Amino acid sequence: MQNAKAVELQQLETFQQKYEGDALQKAMRHALNKNAISAIANVETAYPKNKFHFSIDIPTMKVANQQASGRCWLFAGLNVLREIVAKKCHMEQFELSQNYAAFYDKFEKINYFLESVIDLKDRPTDDRTLNWVLKTGVQDGGQWDMLVSVIKKYGVVPQSAMDETYQSSHTRDMNGLINTKLRQYACKIQKMYQEGKTDAEIHVAKDEMLETMYGFLCTCFGVPPKTFNFEYVDDKKNYHVEKNMTPQSFYEKYVGNVLDDYVSIINAPTKDKPFHEVFTVKYLGNVVGGTPIRYLNLEINEFKQAVLAQLKEGEIVWFGSDCGKFSNRETGVWDDQAFDYETAFGMDFEMTKEEMLDYGHSAMNHAMVITGVNLDNDAPTKWKIENSWGEGAGNKGYFLMSDSWFDRFVYQAVVNKKYLKDEWIQKLEGDPIELNPWDPMGSLAD
Image (cartoon, rainbow, N blue to C red; front, side, top):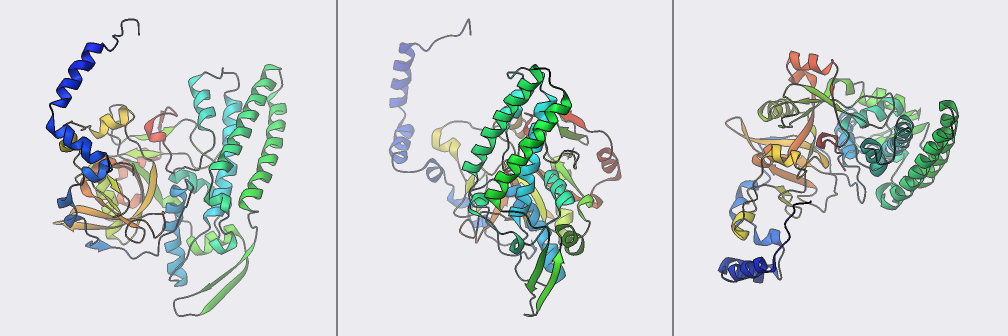
């Protein structure tokens, strides 16, 4: 900043005089003294077109509630799978255990963190990659492929087999303690390397760390079941029980081997990510040796057509978006045309999707499930969303996004491979292009 220019006091005088002559800004200042910005910028004419009516509306069960945790990606994935179980068993309401999946996700992330530190043990702490690993630590958030890795290794169980605890649904304090220990362990690993300890000796120490953290997780989440009885009542009020099931046998019988049929597609219109190429992200994952993170980058119309094809077949879609933009949690509507900040402030706030990604303004931060869409001459106008914020938010927990909001703020979806072109599938089977850990496509949904 050798040639940086400081603010001059005369500038402030000029700015204030000009501001005082702006009647619109004066009126806005008075209005904002007692009102939220979003309320002042609200466009009332946008709401008639955002009614909860859809030409394709797939019936789903009542919404789940992730409470004060960042497990939306996990809830969304299990919400997709629970529909399969409920259909097979003719149940009106059912949930898979989010706590069970979260336990093993957290434990595997701890191991992934420690292995990442061991891999980077010869680097200084201000090395950008090691610094990213240390700062990121272990979070609640995740990606579709991370859920696949956990389920393939550990199976799934009904919520009745491992219910929520206070810590599983209120994770901030627990995560803080986990990351304190992990950074302490990272310090120990680097000191062992500097003292000339072998990799074998370091891994012995790592196993002791894992044992400690496993016990901590059991204290917070409860002990994951090895076997359980699956009891339920079907929609005809008939009682059923299957005894001594394991998480793996339950998954195989009631969900089935379906996960390999699905892939992640993204819409990232940035110059460093050519369309129809496949990408992964360095040091992003949970299960070492599990399903790698892979994204197929598609143009927005190709992306939407794959999502629409799956909805038309009566199957809901896991997706990730930036839920913080142009949102109304009370009405349950995401619509970029429902707020007019430009007129309210006399300022241009427009950025393209490419610019928002490149300059850190937007990235995926929340995962949900698309359960419906309204089509006008086969063109989508609005989309129905199953969220995981409980029935008190939105329309009994369901939300709506306008099609223009979809274009701007939806970044990822998971679709069956049968809705993609053969040449795209071949790309997915090849070696992906590696992105840096801090790339916006490495963001976690929480």
